Length: 163
Ligand code: HEC
Image (cartoon, rainbow, N blue to C red):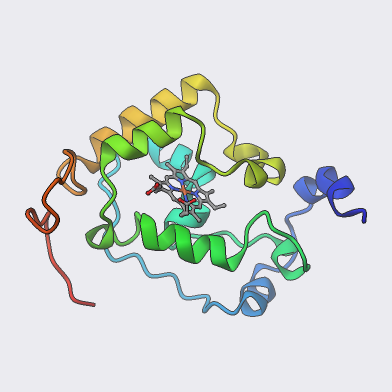
């Protein structure tokens, strides 16, 4: 098994054809963004994109290794589960509270460590964590619930789409 010995080269070679990788991963190359946040700054958007966006938006950048099995740094399942919990390309669908997002970032639960092994850019310093947290708080206020929604269904935020 030499899979993990190749991490350094994995990081250095992301130039494989994205189109074919996307096909192999079985997803359509069409990116749909139905309701993205009004980012408070380009820095927040960039931090989110590099640390979270592959799994929590529709703007996933499939790396070439998605094509090589078995690899578990970024799988279609991660992306599907991640998007179904929190998808900043489809804000109306998300039920996660901003406070919960902040906690998860602060505690280093997200991004998943296996992912950061290969996606070095996703690793957040303490300073970046705080910047991302306050940026998300500013960007998401009013779009995802900011208080604990004790009563499920009690509050509906923003536009409601039924697909
Ligand atoms: C490699 C894919 C991946 C990346 C990158 C990633 N996540 Fe996740 N995230 C997931 C998956 C899968 C889940 C659902 C399963 C779970 O909770 O572990 C999840 C769940 C969550 C949840 C809900 C947790 C809960 O207990 O309800 C939050 C909030 C979250 N992620 C925030 C983030 C933030 C913020 C970032 C960036 C700092 C990030 N994630 C990066 C895959 C990812």
